[in-house]
Image (cartoon, rainbow, N blue to C red):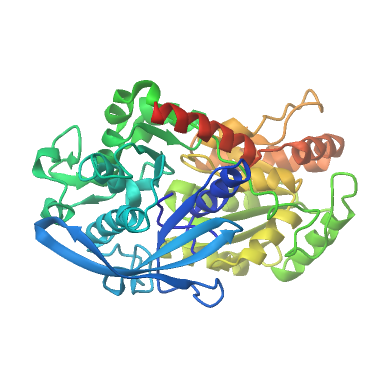
Amino acid sequence: MIASECVPYVKTGGLADVVGALPKALHALGHEVKIIIPKYTKINTERYALQRCHENMGVWMGGNIQEWCSVDQTNLAAGLDVYFIESWKYFGREGLYNDEDNVAFRDNGLRFSFFSRAALQLCIDKDFAPDIIHAHDWQAAPAIAYLKTWHWNTPGLSNTAGVLTIHNIQYQGVFGREDYEYTGLGWEHFTFDKFEYHGNINFLKGGIYFADFVNTVSPTYSYETRVSELGHGLQSSLNHKGNTYLGILNGVDYQEWNPETDQFIPANFSVQDLSGKKVCKTKIQELFHLNVDPDTPIIGVVSRLADQKGLDLLYEAIHLAMHHLQYKMQFVLLGSGDKILEAKYKALPSQYPGQVGTYIGYDNAKAHWIEAGSDFFIMPSNFEPCGLNQMYSLRYGTLPIVRNTGGLADTIEQYSEWSKEKGTGFKYWENNSVAIANTIAWAVSTYHDRPEHIDKMIQRAMSQRFDWENSARTYLEMYRKALH
């Protein structure tokens, strides 16, 4: 596994959750997995017991440039190795991809082409001959190209299959062609079907071309990226993959996201005994300075503050809901990202005291509290490759309100007012603030007027399972096909 993030070491989004969970599921099924990520400054060496395992590893790049790095190692679980590529030149800085002003580092193309090469060099130096190189997103996509070009006849790698997982196709790793010489991939591959993209380099596009199999993280998103603007310009590349482009739904790490054993939340609870959830709700109201009222439904949000996540539309919808809906409700939000959105959400508690609470930033414990103590969890995404929070929410009996797209469409069953025997959440289709506000009204009115329906939905939601073992078996089938 080659990736730019992995829980628990470093995380900006769902990519890290997958890279931290899928290897454990594969390992539990009897497979040997090694994970390689960059060693960023923010990774706590002492906390995770990193040990130096390789000094002065030489990595050849284009233009006859040799870079030098070192490698640290630790264990994600017993028998599951994680390696960290240390290069102060490329990773000795606070941000992963962006500076303190949220501007992408100018040398990201150099940083991650080097990282991709270094990951393969580590396999060679450590005499590890993998059956599969599994690269994640644009940051590791060049590794597949290096595997198929530089290392097509390298002992230990010549029979290795290359698999690429796309977690969000909006992020493709597009850089100026002046960086291409450094990659060393050869100008014969700077073509329309491979790395060339409107005169620039596109790391993800090249990785798609060279991969034996490509997958994304839900069946619906794999369809959407082929046939709509959600392919973000790569629809043709994906369609050329034919049946070697798949959608495999992410799983959930239920060791971490389980209300019965969760170490973060104020009180544990189960589908048989929900009394602890009421305690969590009260604590959330106190923590976010909301009016403490067990009869007022809380709508939770844990998200990057970005347009892709629909947080601009949700901001408008909250105002609509507060001004025009007759029902009582409260909102709690945890997130960071776009500075304009941060400022807007930071102002909401003073505009609606006792009704809206926000925390700008990320706090894992608070994320668990929101999942456990909220009545509803809203995800108004413009598009959503898979989404994990809606699956966490189901486990905690926190009913999702979602747009019918990507993995949200695959994991949430629509509620029907005509039958309390159906539904695990509330879905809408139109991508605007009025549709969001109307769906919030539908959920909140159900809470107040049809509580027996809510009770049934909570029972169904908490019984849902999206285990990583099932997803891991699907990945194994893809690996076997890739090897063939």
